Amino acid sequence: MSKRVFIGVGHGGSDPGADVIITEKEYTLKTAFALAEILSEYGIDYKMSRTQDIDTDMNSKTVMCNQYDPDLVVDIHFNAGGGQGFEVYYSIVGGTSKTLANNINEEVKKIMSSRGIKTKLDSNNRDYFAIIRETKAPAVLLEGGFVDNKKDADYIKKSYKKLAEAYAKGIVKTLGIKEKPDKLPVMDKTGSKKGDANSAVLNLKALLLLAKKLGLHKYGMDKNEHFGDGTLRAVNYLLGQWGYSQSGIAGDNFSKRLHTEIEKKM
View 1: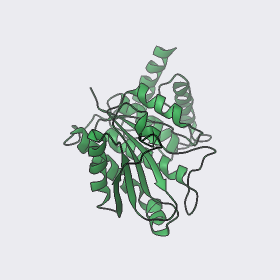
View 2: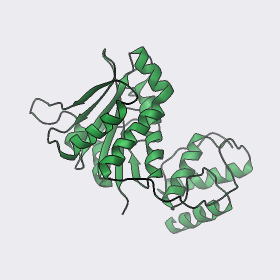
View 3: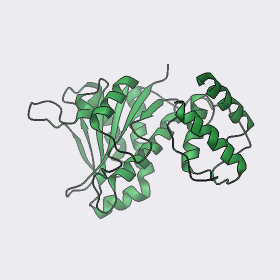
View 4: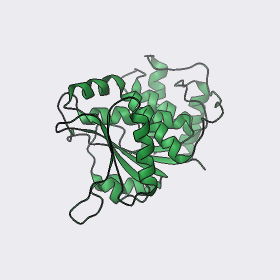
């Protein structure tokens, strides 16, 4: 059975989070998508608390997480309030939560300054952060730099994918995964791909929208006939779920398989 990671995506919708040089909610989502893509390459299943810029609340996030029953939990945030560098919070219980925090911190230190691993208590001497306190799986909260510090903000804008890679390396080490699985088969060598804009993409997106309504994926589509980032994420997610390389190509075989999966749900 594949390992599972729940990716909490900080803020969203009417809650921008810290909004100074850059806006926190924008880069938590970008970083989460980048992390999810890397985890998929290791054969790790994942669930994101949000995949669009929508309102969320902590209670629904922790319920979603516990229902998913992951092996590990990471909650992605960025900091503000005067300071510089990365920091990560883990549970006062220690254990795997502390191990995960250490492993991620060691990787992040290779690419940016770090303020270290920390715990934080509430007035009842419990873990302060609900994502750590209320989830059943070992969890950490990641603060990937300060959005009100120019050096950090510039780095986040340019290199959030490097942060995601560091997070992924720490997660993979904690899960005890040594290397990526054997190369997965390719479903289609030709077909619709990112950048295309034609009737074939429109037909593909109609199928993907129906698949989303049926719970086969949770990704939003791009406007009109364009094959953009939203369509790409949906296609790659489904390819990964079906055991194929996330090539970003949706050809005849993809359409046939998606038709079959939709029929199963109807």
